[in-house]
Image 1 (cartoon, one colour):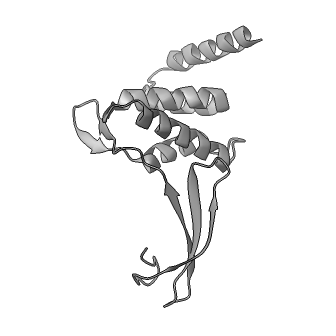
Image 2 (cartoon, helix red, strand yellow; image 1 turned 90 degrees about the vertical axis):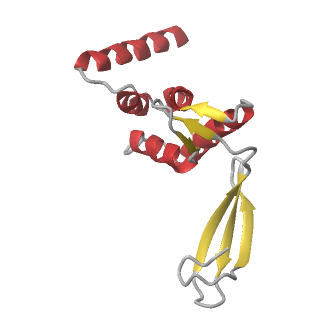
Length: 155
């Protein structure tokens, strides 16, 4: 692992521990050249996934892009970073376990909305407004009605 500060190729692992959800390992590293410390995270990747975009373009699945979108939807909401990581890991595992090498963006969006719906209704609406390209206030009222209806069913 290269040092992100001085680019030296040799760094030392000082501490390793699994994350709470057990889906990754955090490693604390130190660079013997510049003395800086930094953390890396290792995750299991079952297969390389290709995302098929709406216009037909293909790109490698980028877990961080999904995480950024979810974090934006949950900004200033009472959801911990740990919950977000668990949600993203769960979505990534479901995609990898699907057995498909190529995943449509629509599936990723639907899985993210499903996960957000269970964690935070406001984050769900924020994500849906971008993902489904809301253009009018009626788009918001329709999704809010669906949320209210599903909550009544749960009671």
